[in-house]
Structure formats: C-alpha cells, structure tokens
Image 1 (cartoon, rainbow, N blue to C red):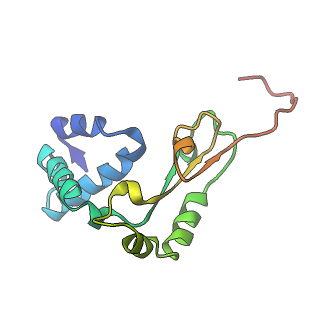
Image 2 (image 1 turned 180 degrees about the horizontal axis):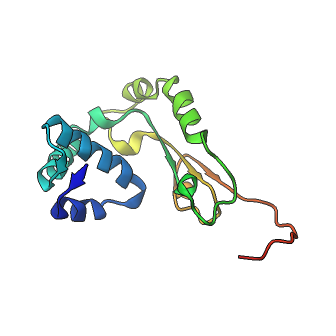
Amino acid sequence: MEWTREATNAIKKVPFFVRKRVKARVEEEAARFGTRIATIEHVRSCQRRFLNKMENEVKGFQVEACFGPTGCPNRAVISDGLADELERLLAQKELKAFLKRVVDGPLKMHHEFRVSISDCPNACSRPQIVDIGLIGAVKPRVTDLQCT
C-alpha cells in the first residue's frame, strides 16, 4: 500500500514499539474505503476510533517482540515463533473476560497483560516495564570469530 507524505509523517510520531500495529490498522482502514493509498484521514480515523472505543481494541493481552527476527545485528538468541506461540497460549486463557470481571469501568490498554521478548540485552522491546519480560543473552566464550 502507498502512503501520502502527511500520513507517513504522522506514523513516524507513533512510538516504534507499536508502530507496526498502528500502520496495519491504518492500512486496514484505507482498504475498507476501497483505496490503495493511506492518507492522513485514515490515520485520524483510526486515532479517533482508538480513543473513543478503546475497550473494543483491548484483547486482554499484548505480546511484543523486538526487531531481532528481522535481522537485528545484536541478536543473541533465536526466538522465532515464540511470540506467535505465546499469543496462541494467551488467547486460550480468555483474559479479556477476566479483565471485564475485575476492572471497574471500561477496559483500557494499560489493563492488558503484557509480555515482551527481546532477542538481545539491548532490550529494544522494553521488557523491563511489562508483566513478563524475556531478554535474550548468551554466555560469553572464546571463538575463532572476529570480535564485533
């Protein structure tokens, strides 16, 4: 999908750890209107819907991963498939129904159970501030490879 310059600039202001998800929602919005170009109006429409109907966006949990699987040069471990497996397992637990029972008022994103996976100690996915944070690391060892 193509993006107008204004829409692209707006997406750049979205925090990097949710940017991919927001971009996908904007593209879904544009497709719903039958266009192949995402505009600032699609961005604003998604923003309004999110702010006004946040409870509909809450699924009870979030699983976030760093950029490791797409080629991070600092990747210390290979967690390919782990995020998908955690999503599958958490979806079975009906966390949104649980949250509706225990939270007074409408659900908000900060009520969700959050898991973060980082493939290296740089921790780009911010695993330190979620409910469960996994940080990849390896035990140092001597090899014949050149140090990076």
